[in-house]
Length: 128
Image (cartoon, rainbow, N blue to C red):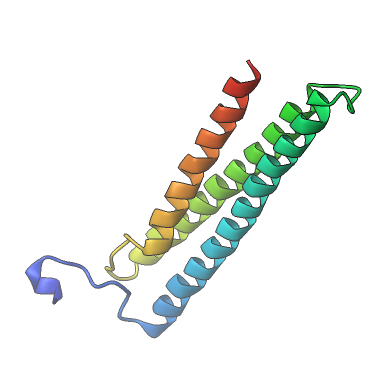
């Protein structure tokens, strides 16, 4: 579709700006990968240490929750920071030429940030 029909192109027309958008996509995917690693590692450590605490192998039974919450919080914070950086880059690039801001990696990253918040809430509720 053309600019006249009311829809914006998926990418900028300028090749330099297009490469910058694609580089921003790759950077956000790296933030996404890091966030996913922290979230999954935090949940795994939480479950492993929770089992050890129930067996009486830990001196501090509250440590599974603290370790899990820390890693999940760091993963969620990483995703939110990555999203902010990505959005800022796209908004700055849009000043040079119109293109669609709705990118698939943005949608997946928003889902990951929401999943991080949900996991953090679930760990807190489970400990209460």
